[in-house]
Length: 247
Ligand SMILES: Nc1ncnc2c1ncn2[C@@H]1O[C@H](COP(=O)(O)OP(=O)(O)OP(=O)(O)O)[C@@H](O)[C@H]1O
Image (cartoon, rainbow, N blue to C red; front, side, top):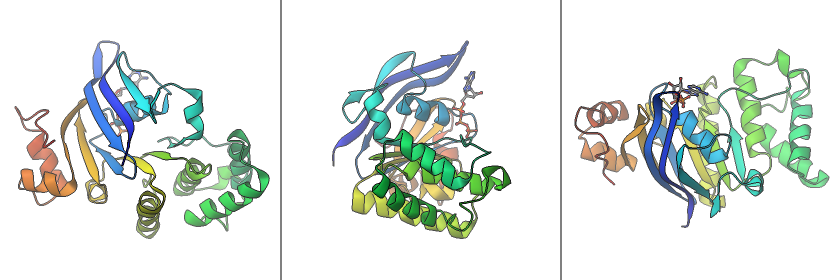
C-alpha cells in the first residue's frame, strides 16, 4: 500500500470565515476513504482542493507524489462533483464521447469503457436520450459514469449516491468495493449518509472545517462505545473532544 494523497496543514478561509482548519490527511492506495459530516462542514471545499479546482491558503496537497495543482494529474483523477457538469442539449452518449475525447481515450478503448460505465450505472437503455429529459438521479448516474470513464487511479466522489435508488446504490457501492480490491483504486467519498460510512475502510468525520475524529469504522464505534455513526459523530463532536481522533 502506498500513500496516494497527502494533505498537510491545509487551511482555507472565504472572507473572514475559516472553512478548513489545519487539515492533515493521508490516504493510501486501495482504500475507500469517507469524508463524513453535515452540510457546510467543508467536505466539498476539501475535495475540490485535492482535484486542483481550488487552492489552500496555506498547507500543501500531494497526489501521486505530485504537488497539486498539476495538469498531469487530470488523467489520474476521476471527479464526480456535487452539481452535475453535463451538456443538457446532448444525449448521454454524446456527453460520454465528448469527455472520452477530452481524456484522449482511443476509439476502440472508448467503446469498451462507455459500454462498461453505462451498464454499471444502469443507463444503457437511456443513453441516446437528451440529458435535459433525464431525472436528477439519472444525471447523477451519468456524472458517475463520466468520473469512471478514463479508468483513473483515484476516484473522488462528492455525494455519489444522492438521488439514486437503494438497489442501484448497493450496486454502485459493490462496484466501488470491487474497484478498490481488484484494481487498487483509491476512492474518496463524501457523504452525510452515516450508513455509507460502514462501507469505507477509513473515515474522517468533519465538522466546521475540522476533523473531529478519524479511524476505521470498527475503531470509531469501539472508541466511542457507539452503536452507529450518528452516535460516533455526536460523541466525537462534543465540547473538548475536537481533534481527539483515534489515530
Ligand atoms: N466559493 C465560496 N465562497 C464563500 N463561501 C463558500 C464558498 N464555497 C463554500 N463556501 C462555504 O464554505 C462552507 C463549507 O462548504 P462545503 O460546500 O465545503 O461544505 P460541505 O461539507 O461539502 O457541505 P454539503 O454536504 O452541503 O455539500 C460553507 O459554509 C459554504 O457556504
